[in-house]
Length: 418
Ligand code: HAM
Image (cartoon, rainbow, N blue to C red):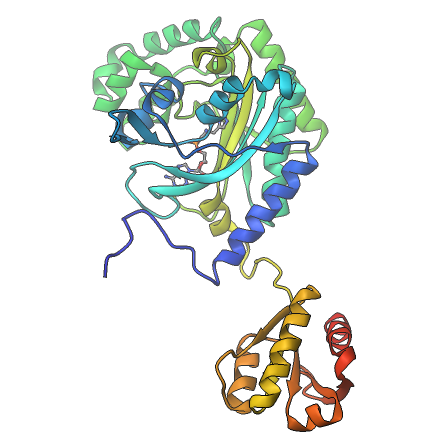
């Protein structure tokens, strides 16, 4: 046996219904909020992520599945969707085709991380992005969509956390204050933090090393260093959420692990997930579209981890399965008629099943039970002679004859009644 690659998973029947529920809910909600679907390749040029996700991020430094293809090109299995969405927006001039573009996409991502519960090497995201709109109402709408997704899935005890990391105008002052506050403590921090202090000091807030925490807890907060424009923006976003009674908590440490964020950052945390507790995360990014060769347009979005949403779903949640009709045949002659009936049921839009290899009637009815069929239509020599079919209600256990030509309608009626 050749096993699956570590950190990748088959989604088996029995589990896939929970995925379908999450995906269907995501589609329905995005469409309700006016977002249109876009699908981009899972493989892109490596530089899209080194420039887009950012050279100083863990993703680019440690986690990318990159290789040289047979044509000598450096390519990467996408670790996130945002740079691809930006590339497609720029490459296809979507700012003209879809002004105020509101886009969503669902698909697999790849990060070479250490697998644990909720963290995989191939995982799936719902990614949502809006381009070209600055108004705080857009931040609020995106957060509302994320909040509604979690609520619609019945995930209880989710917590919305927010922060503002400022913009190109006010960030440098905050970074300066951060480094000044660290002062003599910097050499006491872990190696990663010392590297971060040189490349991207904000990332120090991401540190999980226990010994570093007392020092990090004393560091200044980005919201205290916002310029007027950023402060006004953030308070407008918060006012919208308060107006809609969406509860949130300010988290000074929410700087997010990617390089491109400006102003609003947010995550929704799940309570049942353990260490990997972010159901989704996102924020605004003012410079990314331009940095990737496009016009100077802002963007904002989030990505939700589908594995984590599926894990956090309430027990027993799953896609509704269409009620099934089972067709059973007794004898060879009746089998041909039963197969015709099976096709008729399917063409009429019903979910219809039959044992395609001849079996005893007992084995066939056992199979109908295992499939949880609601109705069985039985065809035997007697039925053929009479021109009818026996309709059995599998729950009640009673049965009656229905005319052969009315069998499909009778099955439909019986399903509707049940
Ligand atoms: P991110 O925080 O890197 O942001 O990922 C978003 C979500 O994807 C996480 O909250 C988590 O649910 C899920 N996720 C990330 N890594 C893994 C993993 N290894 N295994 C399972 N789930 C994972 C982004 O990707 C940004 N592109 C979000 C964004 C969109 N920002 C603006 N627009």
